[in-house]
Every structure is written in C-alpha cells, then in structure tokens.
Image 1 (cartoon, rainbow, N blue to C red):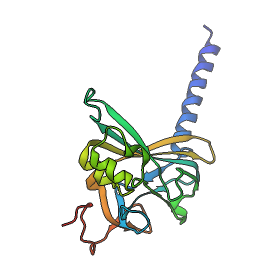
Image 2: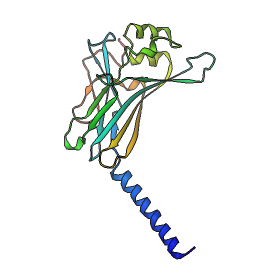
Image 3: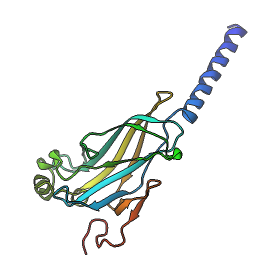
Image 4: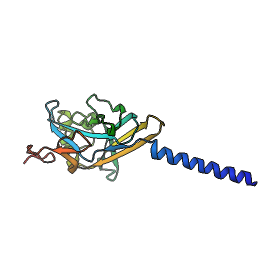
Length: 208
C-alpha cells in the first residue's frame, strides 16, 4: 500500500469526521419539549378538559416538516400475555392532524408551537382488552389521560421528528410523562413551562 493511498484515506476520514461534527453541531434541529403537560378546563368536549404540550425551536435555523406523535404503551392487556405491551398512537393538535409545517427559532422572538393531545374520543379505546371504565368513557367521549394512567401500567411519551431547513438533517426527540407531570394551568408565553393555576381546586386531575 503506497503512502499516497494511506494519506488519502486519512484525509478522507478526517473530512468525513469534520463534516459529521459540523452537521451535528450546527445543522441539526434543536428542539425542546416541555417537561409538563398543561391541563385546563374546556367546554369543547365531554371530558371537560384539554391536554396540551409545548415545544420550541432552540436552534438558529427553521425546523420544518415537524411530526408530533403522542404514544401510550399499556402493559398486560391480554391475560395470556401479561408481560406484553400494546402501543396506541393518539391524534394531536386542534385540527386532528399531527404535522407542523415550520417552527422558527424561539431566540428570534417567534411564537412557538403547542400541540393538543386528543384523548377523549379515541376510537381504539372504545373496545378491546382495556379496563371497562376506559371503554365506557371513550364511548361517551369523556375519557381523560388520567383515566388511562390510573387503570393500567403505562408509559406515555411525546415523540417529535423535525428537519433542519438548511441541511435537510432530520432528528428525533422524545419526552416521557407520568400522571404527576400533568399540571393544571396554561403555558408561559416565553419558554415551555406551565404556569400552575393556583385558583383551580383540582390537583393532577383529582378532585378533593
């Protein structure tokens, strides 16, 4: 093997490493999902509540073609397979679709995105192996996130896919939530935090 081949190989490897570093450091989406789910009262559905999660663009470039996925994993729904997990993908947003065309950088003062988690009328929860209370409430279009979390062993996660507008690099983001992460209140105008509603008598969905 000649010196030329060795040198060319080393230069090629260094160039690839440099390109990988620059892409991952500067040209990938940088997105932050809030650590709390906002819950507030509404007359728009029979459950009486809306659940929303906020996310923001922490980078310097636009993020495009954003997909928002709300996922429930429930364990032990089938008696013959008590250790199996069943996966359910809930619709998101007020318009019953799960895509955001563009999210501009929060650092430049642009408004950030809030996705509604659509649970009260979720069709797969209307039948099957779930707890009877969940099926009944789903059929009455009155199901809440807490109902599902209280009746089954669960994992609940918000997953987001987004693409850097400049480089075309696509990246996956995820945030897991528990029942304790559901907070009565609305989002702060800046950032992704929920401002707790101190005047509401409910705490994490449980009436006194």
